Image (tube, rainbow, N blue to C red):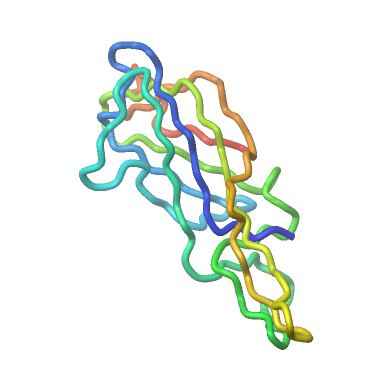
Length: 167
């Protein structure tokens, strides 16, 4: 079982003159096909990527998002709280998808996306018998690389409205 506290993407745009990110791009995070959250990659007044640039974007999950189970009952054992994050009972690979979506007709050319996560892990509290705390990893874990060319736009002559990363 894995708990993901944060998710990140290292995004590099294509070198074509019109390869920047003037169109707003959102990402929908799914676990086993079910939507967990939708968010903007470049929210508000953040700087848009120009062609041939790269940036790291990340999201920190708030609260606990449990995977559905047969009895739908969550149990906290003595001394153990719930982590903030998303539960992946069978791990991330093969169970997580991120769907990027264009919200305008100014095309966005993606050159490469590297996918990262930060895990939350249960650790024992020194000096206690059974108390535990959830601690986020200090470093990001590289999960998958998506080097295939992708063009996003709401204009079907330019590209596709969505592009799904299958981890």
